[in-house]
Image 1: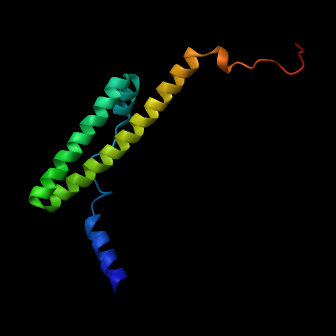
Image 2: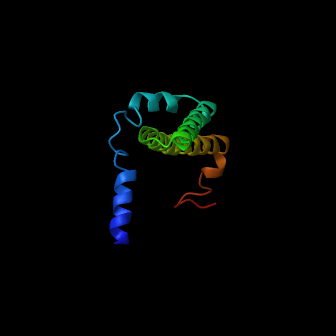
Image 3: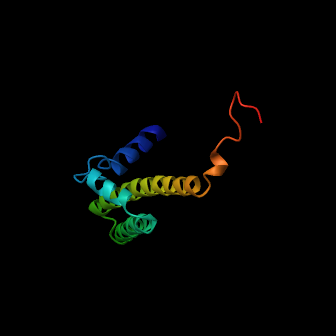
Length: 115
């Protein structure tokens, strides 16, 4: 009985989560974001966070199903943006690390050569 109740609730809450009429991310936008710098990446992440908070506030105030759909869409957008930004920041950090210390990453000796 509890399992049926939980499944009904689950289906009701997430019935439209994967049927969004809007794409989560366009390749063109991701390419533009990847070509920009770390400040733009963080600004994109902050914009997604603010959109999510606005959607959450609207849902809390109204409790309407369309507000809930918008909340889920913004949450998915925030999660995907955060994942992309984190990957870009990690890549940027590794590139800086490799460019700043090239000698530290070269082997000290080669196989077959004696010192």
